Length: 75
Image: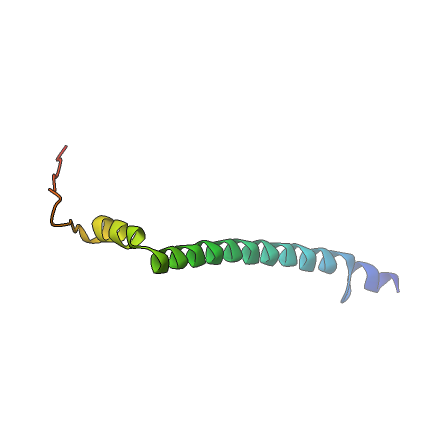
């Protein structure tokens, strides 16, 4: 009985290792949940208004409106 408690299957050391692994997996799940919530909020923002779409077009594609003038500053 003592052997199993210290060295066999279900030993204290093994339980602690499983607990550490479980804690790590819980942390990863929480990080992914937060990332998913941020992505969902971004999707809702893109669906609702033009501002988010225009911002992305400017930042990622370098687009400008007809009434705007584009200036590029080189440093």
